[in-house]
Amino acid sequence: MTDLRERLGEVADLERTALLLAWDQETTMPPAGAAARAEQRASVERLAHERFTDGHVGELLEIAQPGDELEVDLLRVTRRDHDKAVRVPTELVGRLARAGAHGHTTWAAAREQSDFALFAPALQTNVALRREYAACFPDAARPYDALLDDFEPELTTDEARVVLDAMRDGLVELVQAAGETDDAIVHGGPFAREAQRGLVQTVLAQVGVDEQRWRLDVAEHPFQATIGLGDVRLTTRYDERDLDSLFSTLHEFGHGLYEAGIDPALARTPLAGGVSSAMHESQSRLWENMVGRGPGFWRWCFPHLKAAFPDRFAGAAWSDVQRAVNAVRPSLIRVSADEVTYGLHIALRFELELGLFEGDLVVADLPAAWNERMRAYLGLDVPDDAHGVLQDVHWAEGLFGYFPTYALGNVIAGQLWARITDELPELEESFASGDFAPLSAWLAQHVHRHGRRLGAQETIRRAAGAPMDPAPYLAYLAAKVSASASLMP
Ligand code: ZN
Image 1 (cartoon, protein in one colour):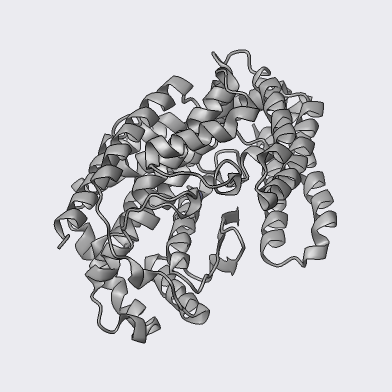
Image 2 (spheres, rainbow, N blue to C red):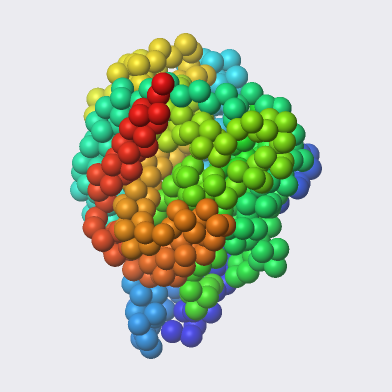
């Protein structure tokens, strides 16, 4: 066990080093360093992969004798990871990486010109390679199961489909029931960058970020990176036209708090991470939406908002802001979608992925299939591919099976929120007084500390009290929609 843990520690160090290189690239590296950085990242990632998949680890896993419960879990999870990693030939890993890089470049050019046909051949290659990848896992009952398992372990396509279909049908009804909300107060700017930065720092300090363990930097596409124990890095971006920096920072904070709350005894092992993409996303959505768009948060935050932008909010009340940040408005772009319409953007992508990998949908027909669903679910006409099928980078990089976890994260967040507010009925009051510790403590206890020890679906079952179920999330959104409808003049 000692030899195995030493090796796993080395692999973990290499992986976090690769992450640090990526973080640096996105936050501080001068642009001309990109080519050299690509080599550096590839080398470190290859070393990590080789040190994990070589035969020696297989032997160590065979003979290892666990000394305690933690090591029993460590062996189970590491064996699963190792089995998966060794099934994929190194040359296929290389072809996937190259096709992903080429796909990214081609996609960026195609999006620029809003011309799907330019991107179609590269996408076709990505789909073919991912089929090859899925075929490396003959135990998977169907190709999409293998793709989904990389992001949401142990969840089958059928299970995901039941949840996402019910979510989609519920959301379509909610969008139709939602009225118009005047949200001009939080849009259109100008919201000075420096004032936003100060506000974001005030909020982060209040929810539990301290400078001994956390950093906040600026990046074009905000993300979170945990480099090691006591080193959590958040990024955000400021746009003077709106207050999105506040919500995107709370989102990344939710991701960071998850990683920061993992039992330190799991450090430098494969157990030290979020248990699945959907669970990770549930943590970010919970802070961004359930907390950050809720009444308690705004009762506390409004004076700080007003101090940051005194002219703008002089005559307003906290409830004006809270109503505005909950406006429902069907729109074409996923990343700027509101809480109610967001899931429909995901349902659409999930259905198209299933069609591509298991149905009769061909790449050339994607734009039409996309536009048809935008009309059916959101009532919108897509004017061009840049505002439609070309808007996201995921497929360009060969990521299939990832999109559903965004919506499943919302679903889990809804389940957790129902349970938390049941167990902690004073929560909104404590938020209003600026105390967010009861929520952090609940999440640490029920979700964060376990890391990957329990497995994905078991962690969800224990924390939420049930397997994935969209009903609590839909009920939470329905309450919001009817509250704002009853405020209509
Ligand atoms: Zn996220």
